[in-house]
Image 1 (tube, rainbow, N blue to C red):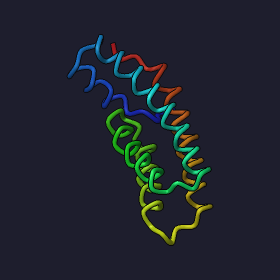
Image 2 (cartoon, helix red, strand yellow):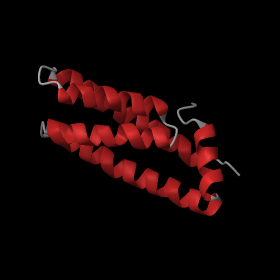
Image 3 (spheres, rainbow, N blue to C red):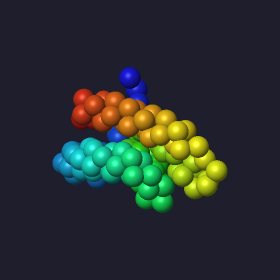
Image 4 (spheres, helix red, strand yellow):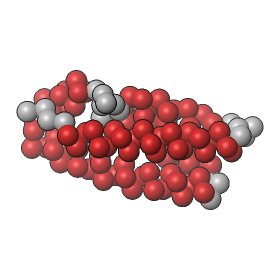
Length: 115
């Protein structure tokens, strides 16, 4: 799949050590799953202000953990939410794209070993 840049994860592992690394990955997965639920709810509620904030968070966090394609989608979603002329259906397509891509990235990151 290669949705996760292994070099980014290796750098994190080198920086914090393998024990802390495993905990950080667990936190990333758990937080991302919770945030994805918030993202879907915010879209369903048409809460574009909070959707923009969640997209911004995903943009940064995904990049920190090597999920660069997810970060790029989140960046696009953030921009769409900031533009009052954006089509709500296009925003919905980006929400779906991010949900799908990040879901796959989270599955992938669970299988990666940097040891």
